[in-house]
Structure formats: C-alpha cells, structure tokens
Length: 226
Image (tube, helix red, strand yellow):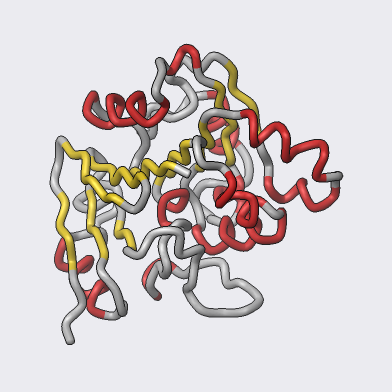
C-alpha cells in the first residue's frame, strides 16, 4: 500500500502532485472510496452534518472527495462486520484510492480491525491510502495521550503501526490554539519513537518504506530523547 498522510487533505499543488504520482494516472481516471468512520468517534465532527459534508465534498478546508474522481463511493467500516466479505472485499481490491477522514484515530483503528480492513491492507500493493488527520494517525504506532478521546476496549494509544513514526497534525492551526510546535515537542517527548509535527500545508508520502515530506508550509521531525 502507498500512503499519503496529510494533516488537512489535498491542500495545495505539491500535495496534489504527490497524489497523482502515487496513483500513476490522473485523478479523473481513478476510483475512490471514502471512509468517514473516524468522524463518528469524535464529538466535534460526527455524527450528522459534517459527515455529510465530508462525503459530498462540501468541506473546503479539507479537500478530499471533491477532487474530480472518476467514481466515488462510501466504505463505512462499522457496517462491514454485518455483511459478507464477498460483498465488500472485491470492491476495495478494485479501488485505486481509499480516502480516510479525520476524527478519532483510535475509533478508526478499532473499526479497521473489527471490519477486517486492517488485515486486508498488506495485500493492497497498488492501492493508495490518503489520510486526513486521524486518517493519517491511524497508520502510526501510537498517537500519544494528548490525542486519546474515544477509548478502545484494550486501552492504550496504540494504532496500526504501518509506519514507524507518529504524527502531530494541524500545527499552528488558528482554530486549534493548543496545536503549537512547543506542544508538539512536549507530546513527542512522551513517545518511544520518531514523530512528525506537520501543519495543514504538509503531507508525508510513504512508498516501500521510503518517507518523503511534501510541504508548502512547515513541519519538524521530532526524535525521542534517550
């Protein structure tokens, strides 16, 4: 699986170009499934109107679904355990890109595991995963105590660990005054591995273990002190 881990979606031309590069073809020729599941676990963005805004491409602050995909569908992970895998696994396998919304990363992680999507990911060699905030953080080993909202049955702050670094999104976002670089550095000091603090004009591209930062804004690689 190829990853484009964003703070706030496809915010600028550099991130857009990185997405097209990962797809290997124009967006207008690519199929997409959006995954709004993380939104239901977060009190600020779901359920309700904001979930519809994400799915319908009516959220201009976080461009994802409105990019002009050849086709766009919805993959709601909470529903998948109640239907046969034959009904949804081929759909995922045939789709070019999965668009994972922001929200609560631990809630998303829980339902990725419960639905079976997490187990399917390693076989999706050519699929692109585009994460937005929590949709990016879910791919990391840990999110840190600061971002724990919804609590999984097992406790803790562990996520999927597809990549070996953590992510602090929305640095210096005016709507999130606590998301400062200083707070990101304090947050990172409590982790056991490296982390990226990224603002909304920044994304992290990962292909075959190679990590590239794509940015028209600012970011910082934070390494733990030993």
